[in-house]
Length: 176
Image (cartoon, rainbow, N blue to C red):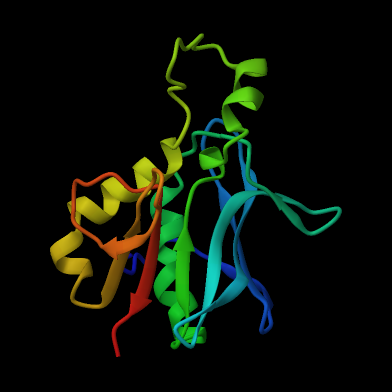
């Protein structure tokens, strides 16, 4: 979430329910990618936006978040967080990978080349990547942001974020 000025983003859409950024992702092939912050609900008087990321479908303006291009775009995605908060200072951001859904494993098994046994190796892979970044940069990031982890299990709940702990989602606020 450190500002890296090398990436050029275009704000495609900005209204009270969503903000979309698009950029060109270069890797094995060049792909137009979209990062979308979509309003999901209010928590403690703040609008909470889901952070979505994926390929941009130019025909319908939608993002496809269940494709994995492996172009190494995570830092580019995280680089939009300060830009989003500049537009929505009082908001909060919810981060959870599209590979965290309960039905993910069943969908993954259809195309998976890993042939996992009991535990799907692709399940929660995206949130683990985001958590890795936050854990690695937690001291620096905590100067500007407040993090909460969302636990799993019988009684899932938001707790104060502790690096190197297991969470299935992250809630981020900008400090005032």
